[in-house]
Image 1 (cartoon, one colour):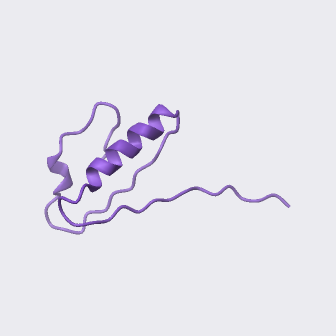
Image 2 (cartoon, one colour):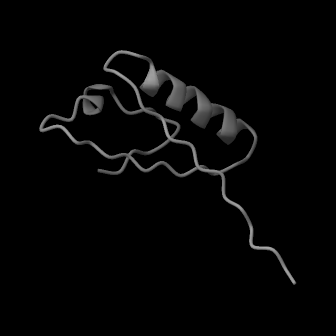
Image 3 (cartoon, helix red, strand yellow):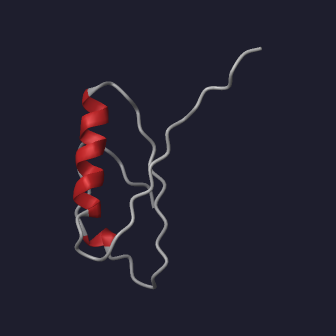
Length: 64
């Protein structure tokens, strides 16, 4: 019997200004350097997109 492939999933949560975006950008850069194509799912619960205030990077695309 063949085992199904396991996809690692990481959840990043924390208070405003705690470094979530910095951690995510560094993790993405690391994975891209390794040749991995990571996927990111972002969910904003607030009325204002606070993370959208950060200018997008040239290395990866943030679809809205």
